[in-house]
Image 1 (cartoon, rainbow, N blue to C red):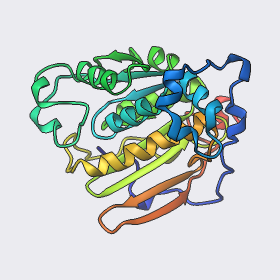
Image 2 (tube, rainbow, N blue to C red; image 1 turned 90 degrees about the vertical axis):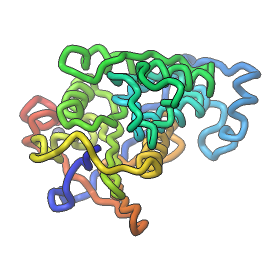
Image 3 (cartoon, rainbow, N blue to C red; image 1 turned 180 degrees about the horizontal axis):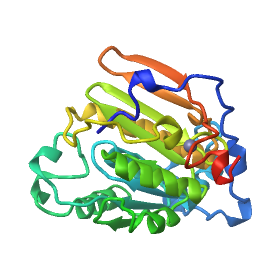
Length: 281
Ligand SMILES: [Zn+2]
């Protein structure tokens, strides 16, 4: 999986204001109630400050699209399912390969050779049967991206190919849906959240695919696991408003040295996807 941007290309400038998460709070009257079984399941996380039962109801009401459910996206899906997200929409093509198993924890040895999304749906169902899991055994493409994004309130981009990332970015901006962007390579990982109308987008950072990117990459499972768990927390913050997400800021993690750095990101007015030139401000 590629890092989003080489360090030398990080846009530096004035930090954008944090996402006003209160604006995303859903009307109380529309929130689904919790059953006694659900209250028992989520009891310990409802003790969190600013989450509580209302936050849990918001999680139950929310839907999240995850593009690819490998080392990063599969971890996002696991933690969102465990947290009681209402619906997961998972897009990932192909069948389980032996080389997936060092990091893709939704895939198992007995299911080698079967569809990845089928394994993921089964594992997530075992973890939390209260979560609706919708799957598509395809990668994000021009043909399916509009419909996929339309099915979810929030987007998580965990694809290894920039073509898929750019499609998802374009459509999340068009449909006005926040997108958590996560990436890793070797021991480095990056995480940010794009909020249409409030922050820049992926194309602000990276107008074109970087050259020389290869599909295969060095990875030990704990690294995508870390950034995936953090991405799940970004979604939980967006949904519940329990804390501020990384809007307008990229968290850069060097897990070899355990150095963590937050870098402000610029929104480009001339961005072809989210800039003023396309009628957004
Ligand atoms: Zn942009």
